[in-house]
Image 1 (cartoon, rainbow, N blue to C red):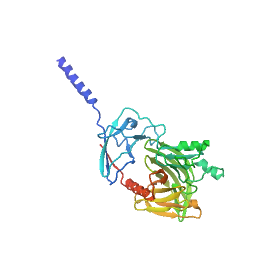
Image 2: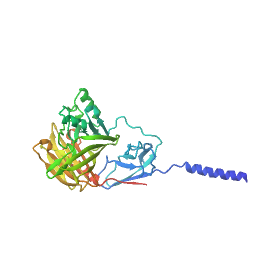
Image 3: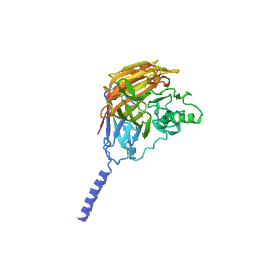
Image 4: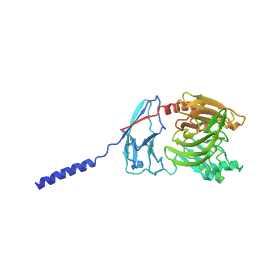
Length: 394
């Protein structure tokens, strides 16, 4: 009897061990493209909750693989709440027009090593007064902090007083921010001269640059001063993101508060601006008109407006795109002071939030050789943000 009982226990234990050693079924991620165009460079955000993972799960130990393929997708993990644990897994699928594709989530048991200098990059630049700069493989931008503001107010050389967004016109697909600042500060070169990588020949001044905001009261546009604090959220292969906080500012007796959450994804020519704002029901996002020698174009229904202009020995398109029905008006605002001339889009604020995308296409970079090519990009970009890729996870 003892012999049979032992045999029975061994059978049960064997069954339990066999069951426990079975691999957990991988989550399947189904992505649907409903548009009649091929899509790439659109970022999918997968939270732990959407993937069925607990809060303690280490996202760096997970990879994504297309079904039927052995190749792993490029991914990036993001810690959005600053608790030292990644909350979101990013990847950029390639998907044909009007099609559906499937990927699977794989537990790799090894942590992904971050690049030393990621292509989607941003940082505070204390060695250049107090800029904040960001870039990807296509475009670069910067804006200015409180020290630069005080220097300008005290009439100290090198100061800058503006909340406008500056453009660095790059024409290489590798990072240039650190390199350009270093050569300028050391005196071994200048980022105002193009030696093959691009240059900063874009004037901001008191203008909105590319994507700075204003509040319009009656016929007057009111703006903030420089940002007062910053926080880098992530840099990586797919996205860089950060926040800029501004001191409260006055718009004809209205107290305006403003925090910008800015992100720039791989392959995109436009930064995403998610602004938390109070004290107004609308904001006006603007792009500078410089010498007013370019061409304005827009499609309010599609949600974009654009300024294509000559710039030194090339041409430049600057634009803002917003979700459909969010632009309630577009104005070409002219002033006797050149730097106050901007093309504005008036945007609704919902629950103290407003979202839009701002960026540029430089002819010398090589992607957009004509105004029409740039406008086609804006039209497609607008269509994509209004009909994002559908994601289902099982």
